[in-house]
Amino acid sequence: MDNEKFIEKCKELVREYAKEHLDKSDEIPEFNVYVVWSCKTLQNSKALLSTDLKDGMYYECTMNGDKKELYFDAYKKFENRCIKF
Image 1 (cartoon, rainbow, N blue to C red):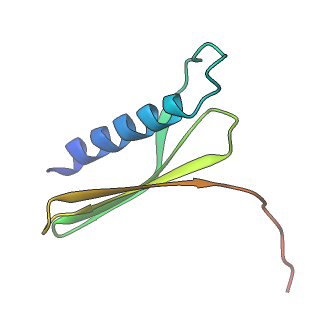
Image 2 (cartoon, one colour; image 1 turned 30 degrees about the horizontal axis):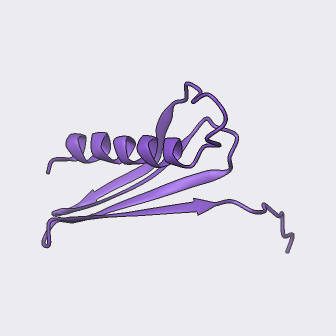
């Protein structure tokens, strides 16, 4: 899978996951999925993604080119602290 197809697939997975986890009693809002960071090294790729929903979620997609597998992780940001040193 080339990098462009990988990014398209990651955005599709994030969109599906976000829709599945929205409150079922609400209408599904329009939202954007965007890539925060991505990297391709040899046959492997990784991308960090998010949406403009106010849910605090971010997502990580990793493609193992040797095994032809794509791993999807979903994370929730609970806190952001500034630690001075």
